[in-house]
Length: 331
Image (cartoon, rainbow, N blue to C red; front, top):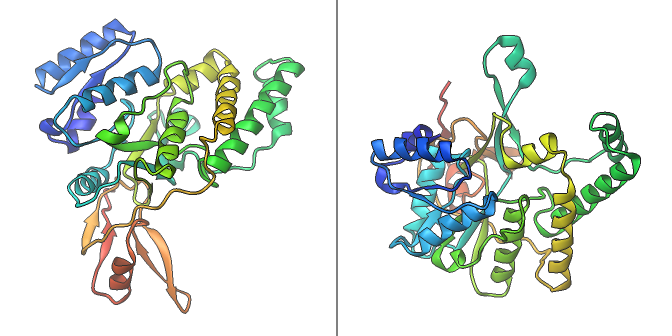
């Protein structure tokens, strides 16, 4: 984890925040960072991801930095993402917050891993909208997870509410859009620490509300190419543990109730956030082959490829052959 982050970032550009109840991990991680002379903090943990994320925001607020990019310990930024966020932070008028759309994850292929006797992964759109077969879900909850019919009914109802709210108030195509980029103004808002899962979506709702109230400027970035990658290769994160080990779906019911409370208070907004748009010169971008470029139709059925966040001037320049943008092939 530590080595991966340091591969593309200078030591002066990264701060590790160790927030865990696992004292052995805390000891090993801090020793490694000390050995590599990387700045780090050990903060008090209550066992929730929200506590760790709030620790990052608090440290950022007390720093002399104007902007920060928050990355979960098991996730990572691509070289393109690092360059993009640096560029935005040094621009004339950076947004206060950036969330992600068309997010991508690296996932362990269990079948191929066993077959080939080595880790095999594949890339997938992590939160992309799917048409859930609720009858099949109900069946699996009873037959595989051994929930009673009454419990399965309740969990299916949780899922329906969860996705209905997400596709209405987060994004029509994704039930969650991670916020990664923060100004000091946006960092004032904290993640709700009483939630073990879903704290990041609730935090998104609070930031989005501040945007539509005119208090901050928040935009969404289309992840083609990818800037941020969810690493789902070990199955050890909080969501997997609660669902598959503890068989806990109560978190979803608690989350839905909070969202309904936000809705009642007028905090939720169905309107989409403005999209990040920037200019590009000719370049080769490196997103570690996670997503690649988006395709645009220009005229007479012809198409060009470009970053999804490219502005009109860049698209016109590509169409005319004045600008060339490609994604690095690392194979």
